[in-house]
Image 1: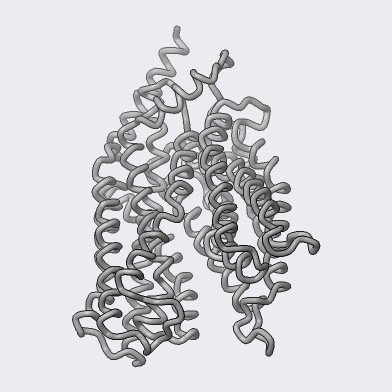
Image 2: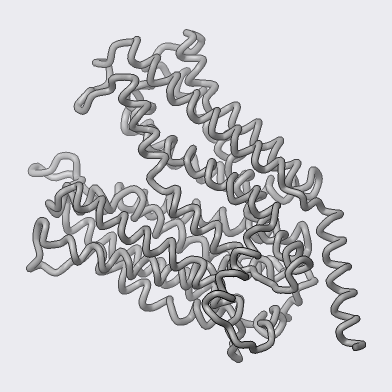
Length: 481
């Protein structure tokens, strides 16, 4: 039976909603980590041209977010506001993603620039048409404070698992070493097969979440009454909506969180390879350990949200997680860790990583759920439900901040004098300490700025329930009138 917006979704509904995160994980993993390398190193396009193409697509995509968010908030069909976008995007986005990794054989080198621009723009816009409406469902499937935490926990869990799984499949199954290519990274056919596999997974994930939540369409919120809209009215309403104080707090918190994520991701290989001198097998084990972290987070996040509340839970868990993350690196700088190359060192690092990453994912889940609670707070002020605009705003800042963390990571590498081609054991100890200090200090500073921004979020459990009561009274009054 479909669950109304006031009820608590069943586990099947939570899984159906959450599995949509697989598509996000797969797309983001490919575009954020591998597309630049594939086009520049494997297909021979100038790295500067690849960067330019990705930047152009990113700018176009960022502009599309508020447009799709507003459009889906005001869309009127018998399939509701969100599902038409999700159904319409599932096939085209899978096809576009496939061709992004399988360009025409006749195009080589820099001639691929225009192809890359067009395909990445297509993938990003089509994915926005799916991602923004699907995320907005979190605020429509239920208005229950704790159930929303559970919904977003499932979504983040599947996003982490999906992205990690496709990465492991690519590295372990498709990019196999040969005599001509001992690393396996230049196996063009492997990359092209990855494009096929990933596009199929994206299609199946979008289909599963769209079809799995289809029965809830009659119980979702309806669009506002038809009215004449000018371009000025549209942008005025968008600005009015995103001016909500709690949303601004989450908007800025997301910005700092993404900067920290970019630094961590960019320096991860340097820390594992040069700083800790881990082998590739040990690095692979660290990657697989993320599965354990995701499972722990899926269990812990709803408990934290229910016992501590979302804001307090995000601040406490976040502060703990972000303090622990750089601790092993600082301990190594101070000479408090076992020597590199010992089993004891690896066991300490992997244990802390599993625990700490779980806490980081819990923080992400709680903040994702907090965004859904802004919807009713804003509706009380503006008279409009704007789920699409709020989740589009978070998507927008995610894309706007993308790459900024990479630049900050480059500064850390420059200050530490880490030159290209340096191998484990060849880096002077002074430079390793500078790398560790730069890594730890930058992450700790930016993460704490994120927590500081979260502290300005105003909606508690009691506040959310008061908003629901006030909206209910308003609806009753409108009905009586």
